[in-house]
Length: 219
Image 1 (tube, rainbow, N blue to C red):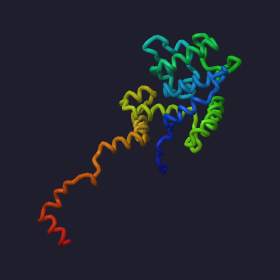
Image 2 (cartoon, rainbow, N blue to C red; image 1 turned 90 degrees about the vertical axis):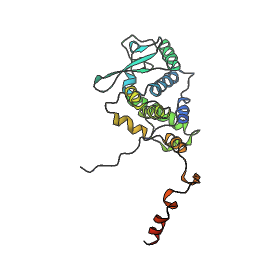
Image 3 (tube, one colour; image 1 turned 120 degrees about the vertical axis):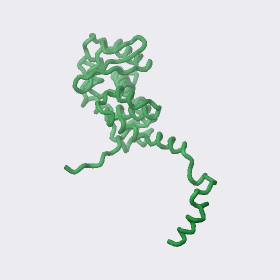
Image 4 (cartoon, rainbow, N blue to C red; image 1 turned 135 degrees about the horizontal axis):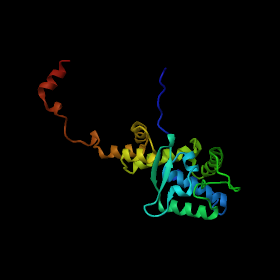
């Protein structure tokens, strides 16, 4: 079969993530829930269904705070949680108490959210955020975009790719390395560490070798 080119993943810049997270109306229960869910996605890099399956018993609220996620093939991994994320989850459970084995993110009737519903709500928030962050208008943003953003931003922060692999639950390190190639800002900083050839005042050694110059003149 003919191989198609592998494109770098489209990911969100930190400012774009902030713009989206600012859109839910946090004066409403629904807006608070959505804000908590998207913050959780960005913090953990979880796949959407992994996040929607999270129950209270999967979260460690005491330090060191973390969440137990179950990925593809029911493979288990631990993801650290920011204090801000833990606070949002606590508040969510206070507003809509759940049993230890019940999903945290539910609708107004207590029914667990579905991935399609989350995508629909996210599209609305992205459309609103694009008015203040025009770069979002050209991006196809889905819940999985937060996972891409988490990976690329961890790379930019200098986190080792093996740690990121464990964080995201990748089977192959090649998958994680794909994100290392995507961050343009990291590449720019690496380039700045190199000295531009135009800055070098020293002539190349071959230009100082008269025998080499004489040979080149004969070509």
